[in-house]
Length: 423
Ligand SMILES: [Fe+2]
Ligand SMILES: [Fe+2]
Image 1 (cartoon, rainbow, N blue to C red):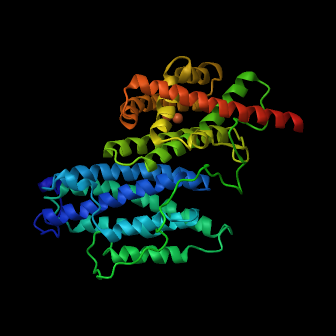
Image 2 (image 1 turned 45 degrees about the vertical axis):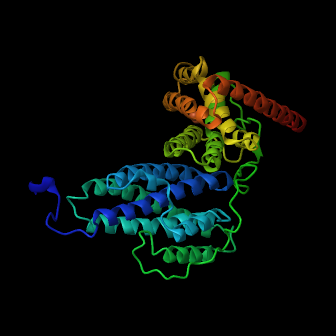
Image 3 (image 1 turned 135 degrees about the vertical axis):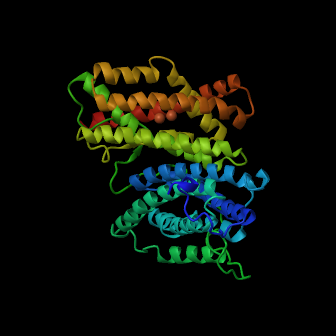
């Protein structure tokens, strides 16, 4: 069709006026932002490595969806003041109960079997029934969200099947699913269009707020124990260059702990501008990808990394600190620090010129690029978080690094001692 730029059904009257549309989008925004916060809160507490990885990816996609919805909402004669409001008490309760998930299976069910399938269904309906010319900007944005949701749900269903058949759980999550479904119904569904009753449901588990774990969790069944020491690979290569290369692969794989630290900052820091949460979602997902760089590099060499001890220092050592100190430690102390040579540039050049490992060289090339972005994020947000200029923040980061290295060096000393007593 050449007319209407190929837009179909140009004469059909849509079901969304401007006001109704803005209200629906405002609920979608709230749901994606809540899911972002819930996934961040759970990332350090969940066991399954693949679930952690997917939470990192999906929370970034939720942040992107929310970001575009925010723009569109303000195009619909709606003040940006509503963007920080909770649109529906029952919807808020649904999210407060979802974050109360007590294990990997419950969380996966809540996200991938209750909330996101309902979102997808409502978005498909929105796309089909809104006036195709007047609402094309919404259509374009929802279409990209639908693509993300379809991938997320295909993954989520497989993960739920895997967890349910794992034999780990006596309770298959049936009650959790039924309760959440009830809360969603009480909200009139995702967009509030379903019939509601005046009787709001009572709280179930959400009398107590969800809290972050004091130590980050690793899969106790399939992974080595959590440790604050770097332990590299089980069988050290004879060649010192290859040893250094394998050390580097392992350090990349251990970056999940950096992602978990950012998750803690994202979850616990209240009342920042939206752009802060969006930026940290991206920062978090980048660190998960860096962990995947290491995983992929090690697996491409046939190295078993999963049964090795798992480094958790970035999260664990920094856990008692306030979010500003946590983010300054990472983004200024570590990441801005890595901009000085040899730093990130040296890591890339080593993999390219000395180790001559094309895959790892490509990973380090992009790792370096990402870290330039992260150092900039650090300078952008730590001053705001701490309320001091960057010079002062760098002093704080230095103190935090000193404290961190003291703890980690001690852990490494104990690790060496134990290794030597075994051999
Ligand atoms: Fe990184
Ligand atoms: Fe980074």
